[in-house]
Image (cartoon, rainbow, N blue to C red; front, side):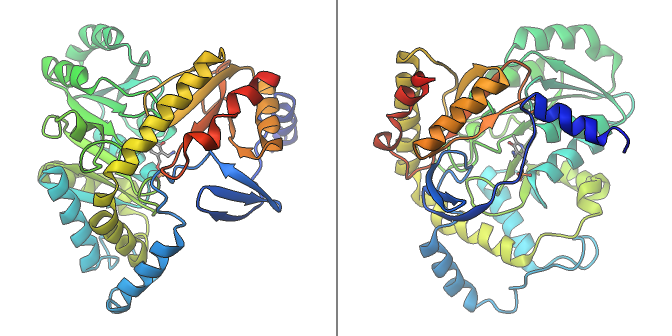
Length: 386
Ligand code: PMP
């Protein structure tokens, strides 16, 4: 506690101090903060499901007939008394969609990654992880008893080099990657990783957090789009982004899922999220997700146009998804640019270390299906003013 004040002071000096914003409301693509309206370019609500008032009304009508299932708290972990048919139904629905034997719900993507990675990674095992994987994956590796190696982002030669050098020292080998990377919006070469995992007899885990609901004919993600659902051993995704709900899931063989049920501490020791949230996830996936193909494709085209505009104006951007980063470099400049955009009514948050590597602070624009190019084409001109 002695150093707490100094730590806070240092964070402020380095433009790394974070505060919870006073958000008044969110309506469609707009967000009202401290009484002022902005275009919301910082949300993971890719399909506009999260605060869609029409959907909320429809959903409330839908659950009127399900009063025996609707409650706002499960009051227990799944393995105790926190289970009801709706949880099993959603798990079956998702397992069938992904053509996998079994699905397990988690309370969030964070719970899923921490629980899954730490329970798999036993002493004598090793996991090979893309350097830019999400914090929840890193935390899972730190909690596990085995060793971990981080390969350079998207550098599959580095992955192979590390596998060649170390894999024969370990009993079980795992490879873990996101599909769409959350801070860069770029997409892993999953077909290449599948080849590598076969060569080294590794188990492959893919986190589709930002791809589920966006990519693939049925919106299942990059594994669906690349036609490799059957080749990826464990697929993880969250309901907290495209689905506009809360919770997460993993799909895999029955043995793997039964192993998680018995060993994943974040699953075993936490109260299950409320049935009403599970009902929402089920209702959205059954009724609304199948109608989104065209709007998802339009969103990805808008993102491409936006990236081109930024590049034409001399900015460094990356990726091929609905997430468009503009790499600025230092924290202070990034903060200033974000502030300037706010003056013009754009809410795009600066992303700084430790969320991204040092000297790669950035503005991260995340698009949603109701944002069109006319809404955002003025941004590069404003950025150039700085
Ligand atoms: N994985 C990735 C790649 C993420 O970006 C996130 C959320 N930022 C998570 C997992 C965690 O998901 P949740 O928000 O549901 O905890």
